Image 1 (cartoon, rainbow, N blue to C red):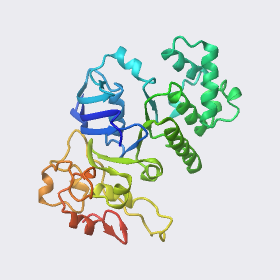
Image 2: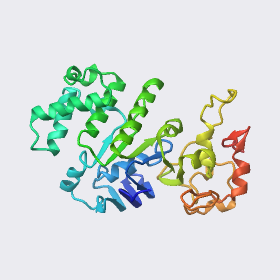
Image 3: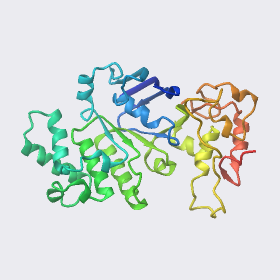
Length: 344
């Protein structure tokens, strides 16, 4: 793998709230190389989006406490000023947000918004040239008749077309890193597949370093090279895509995989599920945060395990679970598939 383009080390984000300090992200580290797709997965509230937004300085506020480092080609981002970050956002690191309808200004034409983004970073480009670039970008992301659709308002586009327009805006300045935060949420399955195909093609053609944020492992399987599994603000497992899907080491990952439907298996009467709900980040349990929901918890789980190689075959496959490799292989097999057994 080539040298890391984006390097995040021991990122911690805490918000001061009326209920006390809330640690949204706790010690997240990862590297991202050109042409690589890194997926960050987990339930809502696990810290996925806060991690990505903090890299771009979008979580800065008087009540936020941010620690760690995030460097882009050696340039530190967490310590950068707002003026310095404005030069990075959109130009070197672009982000596609979860809901394009709320990301686009409803009273401005889609093309005008993309033109504005281009000219904000390329002042020497005139409006006419920027409009021509916008038409090219809309065409490259698969929007039909881009010369006409450039003058549409957001509400005149379908959900899939709006998401394509957001991707066009994100890539208009040829960024080095693309962050896609739940880019297929609220889209039907057919459109999801089209958006994923688009992201995969653009990643390959432009040698983009891509961070894909999702709660859907089915989406992740289509596009990712490596996966970070997050729970309650911490990374509980990380590894290559095949390692996570075929040799998962953490019970939480087993639960996520077990909740997926399988077309190559007989449909079960009921899919396995993870009992309970994620813990409040204001009052995390001692030790492993997944312990209250884990049917395999035992005494040592009241201590927090480090993120390290325990049962995987490669050094890059790490997890936070005290179970031995043999216990993991035996415990994750439920009804002939990888899943989390019913809570005792």
